[in-house]
Image (cartoon, rainbow, N blue to C red; front, side, top):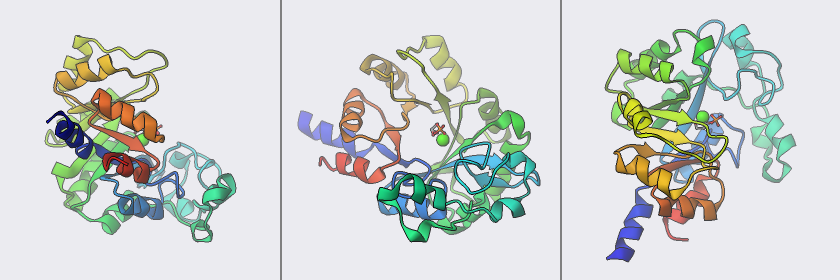
Length: 263
Ligand code: G3P
Ligand code: CA
C-alpha cells in the first residue's frame, strides 16, 4: 500500500513547462510552448510584459535585449516593433547543442496569439511580471481570458507581487492564484504568512534552492499547493516529490515526465 501511495504521489505532480520547454527551444515562443505540450507538460507557463500600446506579450525580461536581436524596454515599444524582432537566433547562439535552424526568426507571441493557438481548454500558468510599471495589466489579462473564454478551472495566475494578485482577486475571485516567493537562504514561513496568502491564493511558488522537507510539509499541511521553480535535474525532482510538493516548474518537462513514470 505504501508503494502504491508513492506512485500516486508521482502521478498528480503538476508538470509546468517553464517558459515552454525552454531547455530545448527559445523561451516564450509558440514553438517552445508546443514542445512543452508534446513533452507532457500539464501547464504552459507564460510571463507577461506590456507594450507601449497596451498589448500583453509573452516575455520574461522587461527589456527585449536577452531574448531577441533588439534592444530597449518593452514599455517603450509598440507591438509592431516587437513583432519585427527575432526571438530565436539568440538561443541557437547560446545553446549550440540544442540549436535548430527553424528557431531563427521566431516572433515574440502576444497573449492573444497564445490563446488562439492553444485554445480555451488548455492549461495556462500566467505570470504578471513587473506589474508596478504596467498599470492595468491585470484588467487586460482578464479581458483576454474572458474574450477567449479560457477555462478558468485550468487557469492559474501567478506573481511575485501580492498587490497584483490582490487586484486579480478583486477583479475576479474565481481566478486561482499562486503567490511566488524568492528565498536567498534557508526557507521558512510563519503561520501568519500562510494565513495571509490563503486570503487570495491557492498556492505558493518558491524557488526550490533553499527548500526543505519541513517547509513543504507545513505549507501542504495548511492546505496550500506548492510549486517550486525552476527544477531541471531528475534527482532534485525526485527529492522534492518525496518531500511533498504538488507540482513544479521545469525547463525540461520531458525529464519530469520520466520521473513521474518512475524512470
Ligand atoms: O514563475 C515561476 C518562475 O518562473 C519565477 O521566476 O524569474 O523565472 O519568472 P522567473
Ligand atoms: Ca515565471
